Structures are given as structure tokens and as C-alpha cells.
Length: 381
Image 1: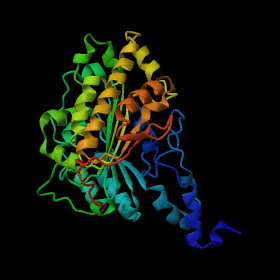
Image 2: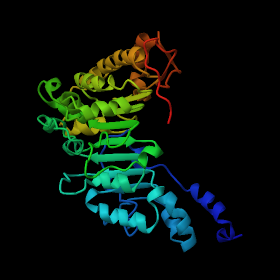
Image 3: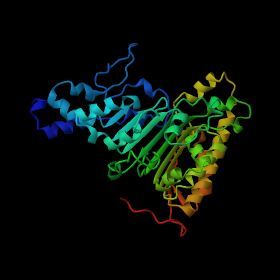
Image 4: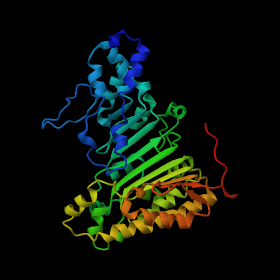
């Protein structure tokens, strides 16, 4: 029996088995580098290989869509539910989606923003969100660019010490909120342009800064730190709406983590918190950056900062236990076998009165019961 002899519904079902997670989301826990080496999947005329022969994007759905017009029409919505663009190509991007009737099928947008985009009017991100009701929107760019997009003055005095080329800011919203139109004439801050319910911030690696004199005095070029010191009303509104937050970094200083936690303490409706401070097991980030630093790094320093940070996190979790709605804590660093026991023992000692650990190696703590002082959880929309 030929594939084309099957009903369209069954062909569509078969096509879904070729689907795969977003390549961007699968690398979200890693140091944010190299994304621009991947091609933009909506550019259907892109070659499959770079000039040097390097494979850019393995996409079985693309190969299937080239077989015939019918299969292509059925595969396109699945193939392009994850989209990547640069703001400078926004008009072409939207034209492509419209011509293929794909606007309503895009669930995740990644904006690769290598530089400032002040000349685009209306604001490129507002136009994008109005025309593509995706529930997930990610910004990938240098710290100063993310600060400019969010209307915050960047803290860049010590940026040279960290050499953070890119960071990731990812927003998520409910489908109904994704259809609310943004007013171009009264443009809001992107932090409150939508009712964002989930936020992920991948800050990158602080390892190179450990090679500088009195590294602990260096100011991390972090959007969240900038929001904390700016006393931003828009940031406070964002924090008040969040139900889930993920903070990903590689060996941040403990005093910087304390500043991040000041932001987290404002998230009183937060139900889930995930924090990751160590590199993914099996990656070579630590070795690579030690080599880049010429070996001028005391390997004990980042691990000591990490251990202190875990205890600060535990104190903030206790705060949100009493004052907030936090119900789930995920500590991703338990995947690092060498520090697992230290992390689990330290947090269990501090949290055992209110929280239950879900088993060795799980990294998951769940709240036993609600504090009488805790806020009532907001209803689901």
C-alpha cells in the first residue's frame, strides 16, 4: 500500500512520528554558544551543508516534504512549529509564514538578536508577537542587547572579565494570552507586554572572571541583577505574574546568586523553581575555559561559590514557603555525581521541616503542606 493512498489524517499522524524537540530547547541547559551555526529552519532554500561541509540542520521532515505536494502540505505545520529569526529579516519571515498559512502553527519563536535594533518601528518584537501567537518566545543575544530590549540600563563595567557573548531569556504564556494584541501607539515594556507565566534565564558562564584579581568584586553583566538594582516597576509586575522560573548559569559568584534570589523572592505566586549552577555532566566547558584562561584559575573557587549559593537558595526557598506559593524545587546540579551528596545533604537539612525530597539523585523537592501564612494559589485560566 502506498503512503499516498492513506487518508490525510493517517498520513498526518505518521508525520508526527518524525517530529523532534526544538534544537534550541534541547541546548537550553548548556552554555549559550554556537546557536548561530544552525540555520534558520523557515528559510527553505538554505543548503543542508555549510561551505566547509559541516551539517547544519538534520531535518527528516524537510526530506519528507520534498517528496510531493500533498505530503509537503501536511508536514509543514509540524516542521515549522519551532521557528528562528533575526529581527532584520522579520518582514521576510512573516511573509513566509503567511504564504504557507503557518502563523497559527508556530508554538515556539527564537529571536537571534546579535545587535541593537532601535531603528525598527514598530518594535520588531511587538509586531512578531502580534502576528504569530506562539506560546514560547526566546531572546538570544548579548547581555547589553537583552537589557536594551527590556528597557533596562545594562551593568557592563565588568563585562570584559566575564566575556559572556550571549545569554538567553525565554518567556512563556498561555494560548489565550498569546492572542492579545499589543498596542503599537502605546507600546508597553516587553516584560509586561503579555501576561508571561514562565521565565527562563540562561546567564552563561562566569568562569573566566575567576581569573581576575578579587573576582568576587566583579559585577556580573546580568539582566536580573540590572532589574534588581533598577527597582523596575515593570519587572515587579513580571515577577508577580510568574508561576514558574528557571535560572541557569555556570559557576556564578555566590554574592551574585544572592542578588538573583532577591528577584526570586518577589515571585510570590511562583509554584515551581528550577536552578542550575554547574555545567552539564559530560561537557567540556570547565576544561575549555581553564585552557582559555591559560590555567590561571583555582579550581576550588567556583565549587566553593557553588556550595555557598546552594545554602542561600535553601534560605530563599524557606522564605517562599512562608510567604509564597512555591510547591516544587528542582536542583539540576544533582546530576553532577561529585557534588550530589553535598547538595542533597545540605538542602535536606534546611528544608526537611516543610519539604520532602523525592529520592536520591532526583534533585526534586516537593512541599509537604502549606504554611498558614502562604498566599492562596491563583486559579488556572
